[in-house]
Figure 1: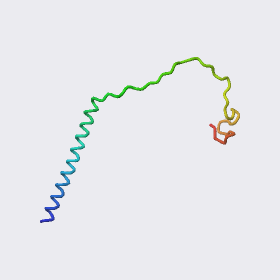
Figure 2: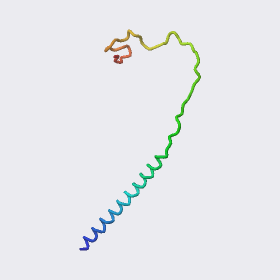
Figure 3: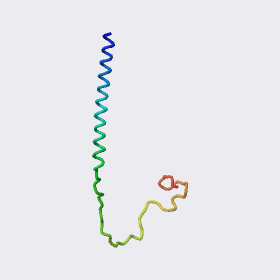
Figure 4: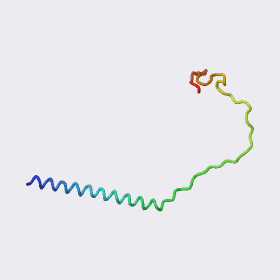
Length: 82
């Protein structure tokens, strides 16, 4: 009989503990949803630059050339080119 009493007391304690934790978590979620309704996201940060005319180089230096490889072949660098 003493063993049954201890088991019942333990089960009641576990149920109270789990109920308390669930209640606290429920209140936290309620507060988050309530504050989320009033939440206003901050404005987007946008940077600007002044547009101006500029000259482009007529020739750009590059590694390799169009003759290095063709579809499905290896180029000078050894990389597979598609």
